[in-house]
Length: 115
Length: 113
Image (cartoon, each protein chain N blue to C red):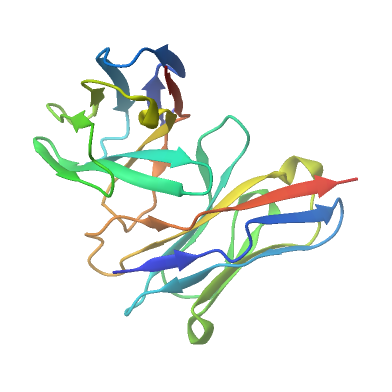
C-alpha cells in the first residue's frame, strides 16, 4: 500500500520569498501524485498532478512540483509567495495503472506568510 | 459549474440524535468518498463507493453509515452521534478511485454536544 509523508507540519515564509514544501511517498510502482491546497474554511482544491511524462509539473496559482523517482519525492515550489498563499497544503499519492485504491493523503503542511 | 455540494455547512447537534449530511455531484463521477479531518490527524477516509449500490469501509467507519442509491448522491448518516464525531467532514468524487484526483465539497463542520 502507498503512503505519504510531509515532514514539515508548519512553515513560515516572508511574502516575496521562495517556497518549497516537501513530500515523500512510498509506492512500489509508478505513482499518481497530487498537491491540494485548503484555504481556511474551504474545501481542498487541486493545485497540480503528476501522472507520467515530464517530471516538472506546472499547476495553478504559480505553483510547480518536481517528481524525483530516485528520491521518492514530489516537492511543491513557488518562486515568490503571496500573502494569499497562506493555507494548508496536502500531498497525495494514488496507485498508478490500476487506480483501484484510494488516494492516500499526507497530514498536511500549514503555510504562514509574514509581511 | 462542476462541483460537489455538501449540506449543511455547519451543524450543531446533541448526542444520540440521528443526522444526515448530504453530498451531491454533477460530474457523473462513479467514485465518491467521505473523509473526516481532525487537527494533527489529516484526512481519514470513512466510507467510499465505487458505483451505485457499491460501498465499502474506509479507515474509520465506526459510527457511520452511507448509501449510494443513485450516482450523484452519497449521504453520510450518523445514527447516534457522539462527541468524538465532532469534526470537519468532506465529500469527494472522481471518475476513478485513485487515478484522477478528487473534487472536494466545501466541507461540513459538525459539533456534537
